[in-house]
Length: 373
Image (cartoon, rainbow, N blue to C red; front, top):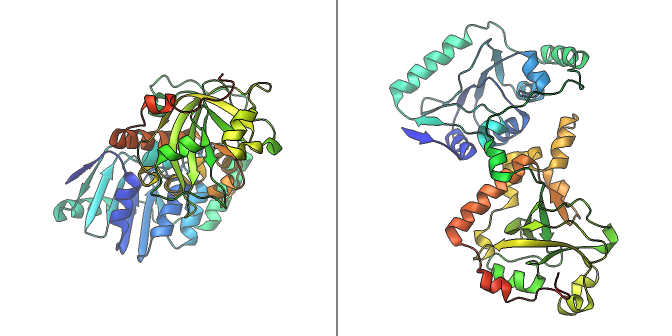
């Protein structure tokens, strides 16, 4: 028996491998988790027990679109009122009983606790429990019913002018990332990609990203940044991955002073075209090679459309099949969603704890801009 507190997706996918029959109990199910399931499923049969409360679908805590995708792939789905249990049963070889719904919140951002069990007798008890629930509902969900429910929900939308009451509990996400916006600023181009054995110190030294982030003058001014916003730095690598190597606090753009000086350009020639600054302070850089950095590809694979503010908003407006990687194309930066910021911050702190950061003495010994502001 093993207690699970994190890495929910990895634990689920490890057990899913070579599973022929999956039985899944979860009151709430969302689209991104269905993507993970279908992408990694190579078995014979999936049975799902969930809730069919239209209020859950209307509020967004569960997804009719996710259930529709499952039905289209031959998954059998039944609904039980007052369902609260969550369990994932993998053939007769393993079982996860957990507080985590099959949602992005359950697998990535919420505080959840569960147990993975390989005991044959206890797996048999869980299968008996599943079967007792399964026979309560005599019919399977089909596409016609889903379409009917979608119509009911579209005709009975919640009024937008009713304010939500405040949740006074402490949010782990807010506690970790605060209430500022979070960005990722990109370095590297299609013609200049990083190697995994490069030292991060060398990139900091050559780009001067310890005092200012650079933006192309042809794309206007970066007025989206405010004082105190958090910005992570990522380098495009030779395999199209983006490696997070640094973090800093941004200052609001000053149209007069935040432009590269001739001295700055003399030392870094490409600043002739990337001459617009967002100045930063309290910069931290991993004291390692790029091989030790958090990878944005893993975040996008796990969170999907919930990685970025723009892709999450598009999904909320009903867009389907969103590829988060397209949000990065030919852009100098991207704004993270709360979920994306939480994911990167956790991974960055883990890397810091393992590899430490470059010393302040190293940063202070670098060129600080002319004039220094």
